[in-house]
Each structure stands twice: as C-alpha cells, then as structure tokens.
Image 1 (cartoon, rainbow, N blue to C red):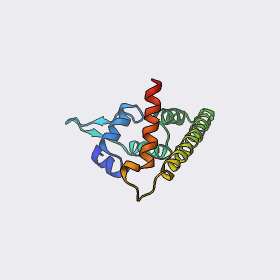
Image 2: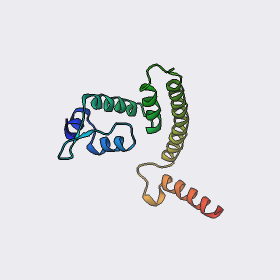
Image 3: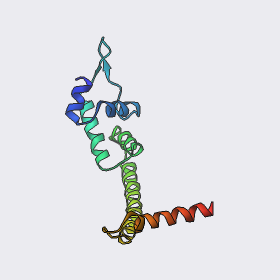
Length: 138
C-alpha cells in the first residue's frame, strides 16, 4: 500500500510516518519503479504498535528500546520492564511537577476577581512581582 493509504489506516499523518522512518522505528519501505513507497501489512502493524506506545506517552527512545527487544523474541523481557519502570518514574515526577503548577495557578487565580479592572488584576500583579524579583537578582 502507498503512504497515503497507510496514513488513512493508521490515523497517522504522512509526515509522522516519514518521521518514524527517519528515526528507524519503521523499516524503509520498498519502492516502486516510480519511486513511490510501498508498505506491507507488517509495516501497518508496526505503526499501530508505535502509535499505541505513543498513546502511552512513551518517548521515541523508549519505543526504540521496546522495538529492539521485540525483534528478539528469545531474549529476556528484562529490558522492556526496565524501560516501563523508568517511564513510570518519569510520569510520577511529572505528576508532582504538574500538581505544583496547579497549586501555583490556583493561588494566582484566587488573587483576582472577575469584576476587577485589568489595572487591579491580582494575577497580573503576581506575575509582574515575579518578573521584577527575577530581574533584580540578575
């Protein structure tokens, strides 16, 4: 199948498919005499696998590690587990960061009522205070 058909079947853009090829997550396809890319059903399955990994927010590097392991079915799955464990740790760190960000934004939001004028906006004043503080320390 051609790249447009593959894009339709996977729900990925043509640019994304080409990106995965450049990153070596997807094998280079065969070419027709007219130099069109021709993809196999295996390429379709590979892209759907990659898409599922991306839906789990895995990085390109993590996906590459999983795909390398997957290509050697007789090897231990220890590296896949280690990759997933590291991914879980990264997500836990991001959750902590996002919770801190949410707390900051809630604090900012509570500093301003909707009926105030922009000149009295507590959110803008807090942001200006941070900028002023950082500018004076540099």
